[in-house]
Amino acid sequence: MKNVVVIGCGIGGVGAAQSLASALPPDYRVVVVHESEHAYYPIASLRAATVAGPLTLPLTQPTAFQSLISIVYVSHVVLPNARVIAFSPTEVTLASLPTHDEFKGSTTIPFEYVVMATGATYAFPCRAPVTARTEEETQEELRAFQKAVGAATSILVVGGGPAGVEFAGEVKETFPDKKVTLVHPAPRLFKNWNQGLGDKLEEQLKALGVDIIYDVRIDTGDLTNGLIKEREFDLGQGRTVTADFIFIAHGSRPNSAIFEAYDPKLVDSRGAVRVLPSLQLPSIRNAFAVGDLNDIPENKLAGAAFHQGGYVAKNIAALIKAGGPESSVKLKEWGASKPHCAITIGHEGGAGQFLGWVVGPWVVARFMSRTLGVARFKKIYGVKE
Image 1 (cartoon, rainbow, N blue to C red):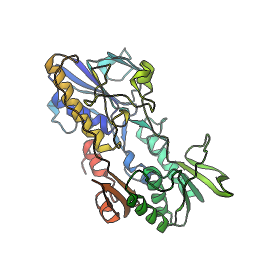
Image 2: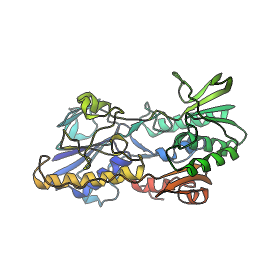
Image 3: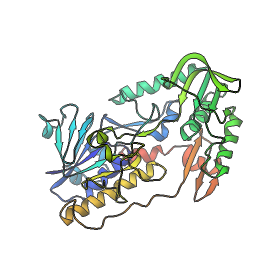
């Protein structure tokens, strides 16, 4: 069997894997490589940071390929707890021997095509804890974080982007009497969007009792998210804020180290993998990158990552049919989506921007804030309600 390797089984990776499984000819199979035994749902992570809730799902052959009848996915392979440590245009190398019978004895998996879906790195809980490999280990980390939030007396949120706004809102909804201060380096929230978006979010946060301080940058040094020894932070102009818990809501970066190690020219200055409109790497024509990892200039949203997986599957199938990655066949091109977002503030608050229009909590709560799309997450990974 010829392999099409998918590195990472988050939303973008599972979208590619499921689409590939139904698009590939019978002498090809999908091999999914994922560094833990479960999928993690970042969209619900900030609510799960304050209260218990569904955030992880097991990764198995049936869950990764759940949307297909069993006869279709029977030849495809899922390798959980498999960390890729080296990449080349023809193979990936794992940190340890895989458990699957067909790959025992070798840490190298050859491929005809590869889909890079390693996402972005971000501090826990915005992304899964880097040390956790099992669902239980991840849940233990979440329970510890929830306990730390509950124990804090004064929380400092550094950064007023989506993560900072949403975390502040979740904390104040669960602990309305807890002091929360949000420090943002810009003069207003979401300054690159319609002003009404930031205004609506600011109004709701202030109504919950969040203190917002603009035009201030805080040097967090080597601090990490969680409880800290109570300390005073300098805000400039004689102002200070005291906190015993810090949440750093910035610092996301494409998770591209293994690709950059092979060839630094594969990534841009931010670490994003350079791709053509076909999501194909310019210099490695049998490789594609989806989601947070690539340099497509658009908001990095879960829905876009999932659909990019479908585009890649069609392009790989077209290349196979045409004779190989160097074929001149015209590939399907991804058109960057128009800027849009939905920022939640607890179960009933939030604001969003769609097609240039700003909407408030009544709209956002009904399609995002109340459920955070958890049912969709479960459906993608084959968990029936």
